[in-house]
Amino acid sequence: MAHQTKAQKAKAATRVLPEEDPEFQIAPMIDILLVLLVFFMTIATDQVLQVNKDVVLPVAKDAQPDKEVGGKTEVYVNVIWNLDNTGRIEVDSGGPTDIAGLTEYIAKKRANSEAAGLAPDRFKVIIRADKRAKYQYVRTIMVAIGQAKVPHVIFSAVDKEMQKP
Image (cartoon, helix red, strand yellow):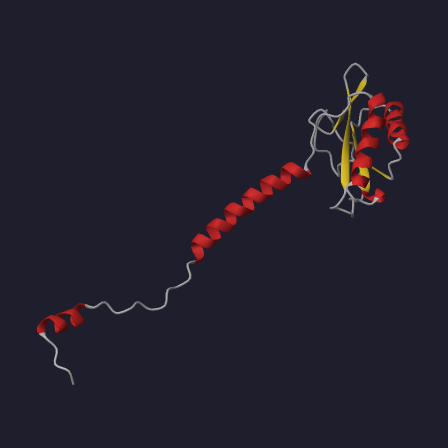
């Protein structure tokens, strides 16, 4: 056995023993996950809800949701019915505001999606028509969309009365 000096004995006595295995802290992990959850929910809500406050959607209690989601190119056409019994359209966030330009705009979007490698049947137009809109006006919009050779046209509706005109 080796002989230890007083300094070596004092150093050995004051040495801190290693702590036990560190424990996994779950509370900070939950905090981070909740922040990420809120972040992604707000982003997803922005992308999913293409809402126009001027459009009051009709009620369709037996409507079926679109089952094919993802990988599609969508064009939203909001049909707004004014108090003076005239209609106007808003396409996406800056498309044409007249029916004459609608066919050309949708045909370009469809061609761009096909050029990007998306199958032609994956392109769709979603019509969000105000429930007060006249059928003749909506029909002219549907004819313009048909001239652009769109394979899928979907009408938006709500399952219960949510907004008051």
